[in-house]
Image (tube, rainbow, N blue to C red; front, top):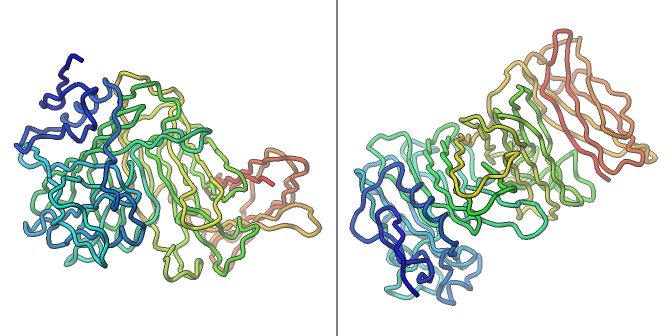
Length: 505
């Protein structure tokens, strides 16, 4: 077969047909030029040729590692990248093995030049007699984690982790790990197999002394699309990721999920049918927050449905959305080991006009707290066309809470339960904050249901919170699904965000 040459960021590579894996086409040891266009150029050219999966070849002992064994593959903290350079960030790397078998190549960027960061088993400790990788083999890495003075100025703590497919997550001051983000979702919750794009390579920019942010570039790839991502990570009371995503589809993408978030919701006071658990609530996130292009602020409590459910919130040029954890009192969970009250929220703030589409929510049934069953993302109304660039810029806020309309009260809790004699369901929703706090009267409910009968909608002061409680009864009749919508208002207009929910049998 005749060999052709494709140019990848200045590197002449053989035709795809001759590659067992793109891992064999890594950059040479010598440094090469690097700028903001380098990774997008690689992704654009990668998308113009047939997809070749990343290497998953591993020695059998590593591929067969269990969870506990994999935890004993520990990066040596003394070998952390930039540890001895007095810089505000350090990087440690994850070994391949267990369920993290995709090879991920690492590159360093300094003074406009890039060079590979090579794997060595000397970078790791292998504790408790776990199988060691063969000496001298270049296995590559599974991912990496960033450390910075997050919790205390005199101590480097874990800030962010990139591990598995295109998953990543971060913490903020006073918070731990919880929900995850992804580079791209393809077909989440849809019939058939979901496609999981992977970050197959990273470029880590050396930060300047005293730098407030760390810049990381990533190359995304899957059978349907290639992409280039630039992350600017800034830790603090709220950790901010500025994301610049450029996607180059190989085929039209009608099921693309932009800025996807993945979380866990098992139960809470409004959704605990069949739950036999000593704890009052178990979740990483308790609601989907929306700020629409039309300036409506809304809250949709998450559910653990009996069957997989999709919800689409149509919009144009959204101002933001996120999976949020509003409960912050340990007593609301009674789980001092898991510490769910310290799980971060993640708020997505588009930095450009995204046009028409919908915030898409997928809720998957789960019987435990170990599987992520909630996905939220932006889905453009029109498929992403093949053969051209699609660019999405957005900001991720890993935070306790987020600021939007300060005058509007927000949902603090949702509760529901069956009425006597099977006459329907009672809902109670607590609102706090904004102009509602301290108000003595003049508050009324606006509530509606898409089917069934909604009755006895009332609101009254909540002496425990200082806010107001709304309650109503729902008789579903013969309906199989009912969309609920409510808010509080006064003589001058709205006093609260919009509460949204769905009833199903």
